Length: 320
Image 1 (cartoon, rainbow, N blue to C red):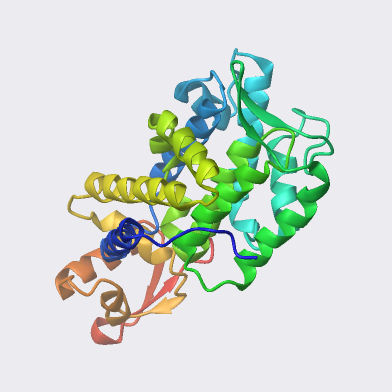
Image 2: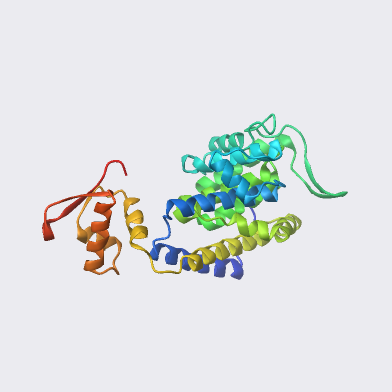
């Protein structure tokens, strides 16, 4: 069965706005950010996702762990960060439509934190806030079948990735397939589903906005539970995604530097090219600016140059 939700006017509007923002991201060559910004965003994502789960380490401490420096703090919190770094470093190796990859990611994320990492729970669980029971998860006997249905939805339904990512996130939270780590897995897998269709999401820390809107996040989950469909949660998450893309484009609303263009072009993995090929990527660039970029790429050791004038050919150095 397809997970229940309605496509409301709000959802349609947000999908349209997000599509426009993704177009702006691509037009500004922001789908491949420079290494330093990628590192900063990975740290923000890890910090925000773990902070939601009660991790006490600061961004500075997480940065130190990323840089292999010694950090003083609760051992459990340090292990959570080390595990998250490993998962996010290997994010592109996971396929969001394969259930075994999902279990492997949980195993990595919860290694040395729980005994049955990478395995579905074998006991009943509920979510309690103080003395109030917020959610009773489905029976553990049903978890494997429910998760198989959810992955069948990812693999076979025609819904766009923006919808699928939100639906999967909510349904996984509702099923609560693991004894621990469900929240961080829901957010991680939504990121993975999105990045397979839109590469920018590999570097976009939308979990920072979830962390800032944590009460609304849980409220959207709770209201969707009461309605028996994920519509409200989809609206909430699409709005978070739109805000994140807006922050990205606003942050990068500057003149793109030559080194940004060169770095972007290198990521295209075009081994042999001319100035014309370079201009085909940066259509608004003048021929003089393209020549200056390519000259700088040669000076920086990124490209090799042969020929002269119109017959000049550039090659990407093998160590790039």
